[in-house]
Each structure stands twice: as structure tokens, then as C-alpha cells.
Length: 123
Image 1 (cartoon, rainbow, N blue to C red):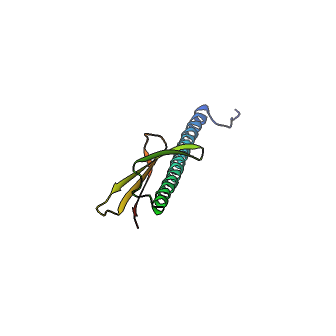
Image 2: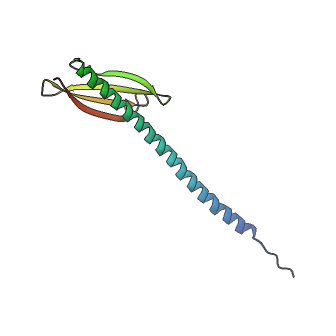
Image 3: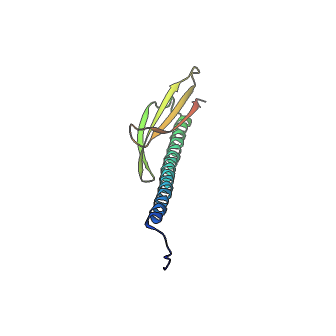
């Protein structure tokens, strides 16, 4: 009697199912990593836009525009995407000091991706 060498069909099926589970886990991790990277990129761009808008407000104050304009809204394109920003100015107990907050969203009524605040004063 000749002894046949090789794997049985059941052994091959078990090996393939183990490989499929491992590949599925790797694919899930890769998908989560890509989504995380995209969120991080969006937050980075939003921070950049918020910082730029605060710089605009500070420049306007230095040029003598007081008080800063409140509740400005706008949109701009960065990295081939539309971004929506809002500037909110709040009075403080000190007459010559205002709190300025900038919020940036990727969608007009979407989640705030970046929020920066600062105080500006009249000199």
C-alpha cells in the first residue's frame, strides 16, 4: 500500500479560515489607521485656519479697529477642501480687553475641529 503525502481537505479549510481571520484583523487595523490619519489631518488644517483667523483679528486691532468685529463667519479653501470658520468676540470686565474665539468646521453645521481663544487689548 502506497502512503499518500499531503493535507486533507479539512486541514486546508482550517488553514484558510485561520488565514482569513488574520487578514480580516489586519484589514480592520489598516482601515482604522487610515481613518485616524484623516481625522488628524483635518484637525491640523483646522488649527492652521483658526490660527490664521486669530492673526487677522490681531492685525485689525493693531491697525486701530476697535472693538474687533463680532460673530464673523466665513469660508475658505485649503488642501482642496472647504472650511468654515467663525470668530466670536466677548467683552470682559476690563473695557479695553476682549476675548476672541475662533471655531473651524469642515462642514457648515458640523463638528468643531479646532477652537482657539485669545485676548486682545486696546493700547
